[in-house]
Amino acid sequence: MTIENAADLGGTPARDTALACIEAGIEAAHPEQVVHDSVALDGDTLTIQSTTYDLADYDRVLVVGGGKAGGGVTTALEAVLGDRVTDGVVVTRDPEETEFTQIVVGSHPVPDEAGVEGARRILDLLDGADERTLVLGVITGGASALLAAPVEGISLADLQQTTTELLESGAEIDEINAVRKHLSAVKGGQLARVAAPATVAGLVLSDVVGNDLSVIASGPTAPDNSTFADALDVLDRYDIDAPQSVRDRLEAGAAGDVPETPRADDPVFERVTNHVLADGFTALDAARSVAAERGYEPCILSSRVRGEAREAAKSHVAVGEEVVATGNPVSAPAVVLAGGETTVTIRGGGRGGPNQEFALASAIELAGTGSEIALGAVDTDGRDGAVDVAGGLVDGETVTDLGAARAALADNDAFPALEARDAIVRTGPTGTNVNDLRVLVVESGESGESGESTE
Image: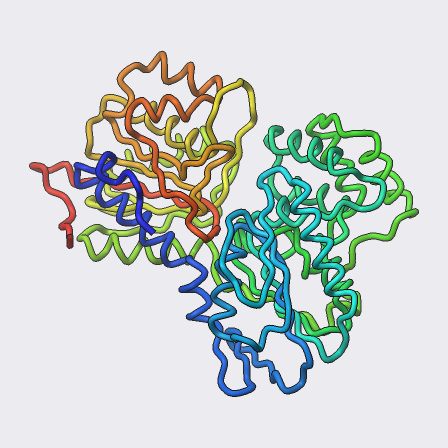
């Protein structure tokens, strides 16, 4: 993976270092690398991390699931297993060439008919699973939308409307998924329910703060603690104008007329093991190594940053200012790293995404301070919000018209504001998805000194 417009974005030590850290973080979380590090086959023994599966015990090996990194995980699995894979269906956003598994290209962040059809194929495939079936569940971020399977009585249009309003409300991902799980036939542990009594090994790439298995991809192979009542509470708290069919379904569930999603003590999970192969810290750790190699003091601030993007940006800039003023939490030249998932509450009609808003808000805070501090913010999947760019890279020279920048931020119009200043990061689809990656680079500020580049 390379940053497509790196030549336009670089040019200063701080910017070049930020770009190098971003590239290293994304590459470390690529499915090919992750599966290579975690999955191996020796004769009939399949090892996933520290767990072994004897393939002689199974008549069929099925690969099912989805998400933005689903295609990459699938091709990497086929490279390990070859024709040991009997069949499979994986729903993802970008096409992949596979030999034994059907790849269905669906839509994200709002589901489409292709995703619904892909989920139906998975349910049909699992319907015949038994004790001699091994199911390899490909569980990656984005599957909440891509792996759509609305329950009876909920139309695709109903699901699309509800999803769109939730995404624009500023709700946290666990809240959004509490609703989606209770409108789905696969989410909230229900894929595991359909697959039982098969053995299920979930191969998880996490895009969720804290790696809550019930939230990643809406937890198709994980126990669920959320309830129909929780889902209704989310609709009410964020004033979501959901279709009546959605409210009827959730109210029926809250009244006990519809079975809840399976809990941890449900027998369907007795033969289920979920393996988190990569997460946001995977990217942060790789970025930290690159920063150190280039002569900077690295510091991982947190892998769990969340909340409104523009507010989180102020806190990150404040950390950079503290590094300059007091040498805390690290001394310059330094690279401060953070991951997580910020959100945007839609207030205007512009174009952008959480990382672009983070970058623009940071540029406003940094305005006039020069090039000694640079801050890059990207979505590791290469697509930030509804725009086909990864995010932004800014410094104190990015914003020259504070009034225009503030107006763009107020209108959720970060993309054109950053694009006009050559501050957009473009990667194209990266094939992975382990949440956001933010890189704050602080030069020493002493006679132009900086970290030493290894390039």
